[in-house]
Length: 150
Image (cartoon, rainbow, N blue to C red):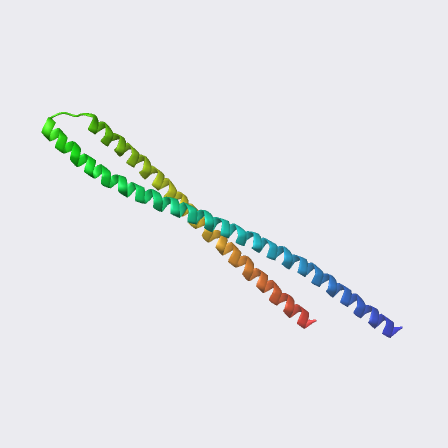
């Protein structure tokens, strides 16, 4: 009878340990899934940031080109005004170009602000993914220690 109780106790302990292992495995899998999802989000944010950065650079180059054109146009306007003594259609073209540059500068500022937001978001998600990975590794080490202790 005493041996039977010992065997039953060992079987119960083994079953409890198996249940604990199963629960821990499910928790680890859930943590790993969250980590995979966060890593996917980081990749998505990186892609969006890359796209926004490319758009920003394109607009910046376009802005530089327009500024150079406007510099030439202003010089031409001043020369025409000096030679003809009045304002004509050229002034309207220059004003339209200036308005376009102002619009592009506003768009560039908006893109820069969004790029900054994406960078902050990406840093946040990278940190979260790193923390989740560290927590997962720590859980695995703790589980291994617990199993060795038993």
